[in-house]
Image (cartoon, rainbow, N blue to C red; front, top):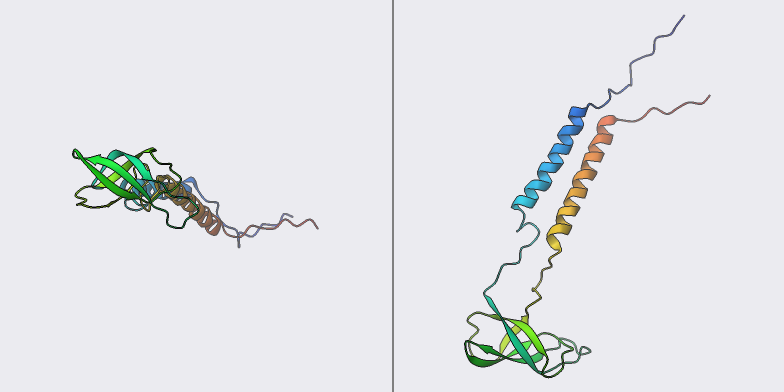
Amino acid sequence: MRRRSSQRGRQTPLGWNVLAVAAFAGVVVVFSAWWFGPDLFGRHEPGNERVVPATVTMGASCSEPDAEETVRFELDGETRNGTLGACGHDREDQVEIAVPVGAGSGLIDVRIAATTRGSSDLRRPVGLGLLALSCAGGGMYAFLVARGPRQRAVLI
């Protein structure tokens, strides 16, 4: 005589529709973060700056804390001087600097044009990658919770 197996305690297998909804939700989150996200992961505002070539007039050693160098540059046909928060340049080295628009007179605080204060070009792709990984991790956790505990094999 055959025994009927009890259906009690068995979980129904997850269908493709449940997994498709979870995957679609993750894709929607990543896409909307990409679409609306320039401010989400930090956006560099194209500031009110002009990029001009400059000549280092007084270099600074990189062993000094808060090293500043002095530079000379042409702005609107006028020779100006500025302080550059950098180090390691020799006298008469040529550098590209970013000068704020409407800087006024006197010594102007400038920065190297290839840098941006407080931001990195990697923030957006790294942020989106981490967001995608968190969506995948959340989807996997939801899958494991919905699947329920697995039956252990008995070898006796």
